[in-house]
Image (cartoon, rainbow, N blue to C red; front, side, top):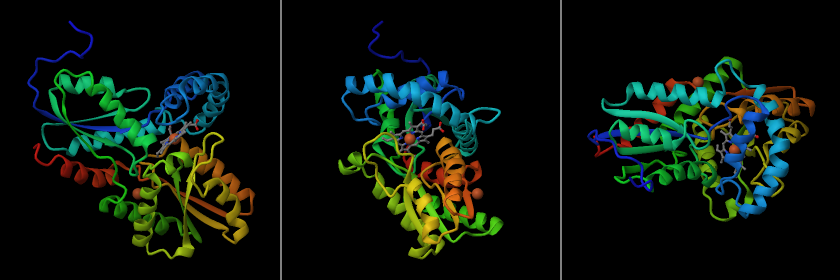
Length: 335
Ligand SMILES: C=CC1=C(C)c2cc3[nH]c(cc4nc(cc5[nH]c(cc1n2)c(C)c5CCC(=O)O)C(CCC(=O)O)=C4C)c(C)c3C=C
Ligand SMILES: [Fe+2]
Ligand SMILES: [Fe+2]
């Protein structure tokens, strides 16, 4: 048989599948496990848009040896008994969603990089008879480097299917009413329990300035989420700021930078700060270590007195309320 195409199962192809996609994470908090994960992630030209051979030399010669060790150390500070928070959160969310999806809908998750891979999960879904597929990257705001890269993995599989699935994708939900309201009430509940700081910093993962200038809609999406969320919370302009974190490499990234603001805000008279990361579905390295460990230490070392990190929505219950109606709406006509 031809190796050009994947094998076709003999089961009837009538089922509906929902595939949730997240970034991926190392299998252990060690340099040996972090390096192959970073190599796959950072070799994606959606993520680093440099000429392939030049970048591979820099990546393998400089970045992986140094960053592998540094990132492993960071991962070990947030690792849980049963693994990486990103994987645990994605698994829990998928299980909760699967329970409430209409009968006959198969709900699975896969990772853009590492395991479980999109290719393997889609092949399993095909064996289960999935012919109608809805794909949902777990990033509220679309970026070519996150949602775009996740969806690429699905298109790669479609290129190899003899009988292609009917595919729909949800490319973003940055302005979705349920998402905004659930996040706003999550923040309000946090404030009721822990008290409220002087200022709210909304920190999103950044992207390179060049990708923004080339037309990526990510910053616009983040700005819309911020506008809707602060309106829902009733915040005045003097009470919040949007910023971008996780800068990588030496080229300019979109700003203002979270890291710079954490140092500058105490000098501007903000001594008690609340920080929330609306671009992350589950807490992960970038929120738990970069913000809640390193960001906290920076803010307090530069004169800040109180730093409150408001966790991501995390709870399956809250996310199910956001995602279930969104998914149902996009399954319309298939059920
Ligand atoms: C929320 C959306 C994300 C965008 C947009 C994004 C772009 C982007 N990221 C890097 C480089 C790294 N990101 C890393 C971790 C990481 N990134 C996201 C999300 C987005 N990235 C998440 C959820 C995570 C956490 C993964 C986890 O296991 O918890 C890392 C690895 C960690 C480290 O070494 O610091 C890198 C590297 C670039 C270059 C980029 C846009 C071009
Ligand atoms: Fe909550
Ligand atoms: Fe990232």
